[in-house]
Image (cartoon, rainbow, N blue to C red; front, side, top):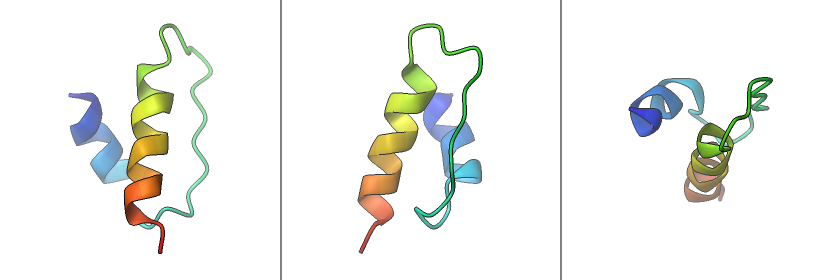
Length: 40
């Protein structure tokens, strides 16, 4: 589910990601990984 949501939100690797209810940090970790995949 996290990867699906991040695929809609992180499209170019230039987006800033904020997760104010961080919890376990899953969204932030996966968003970072996706940004690294998309970076040239």
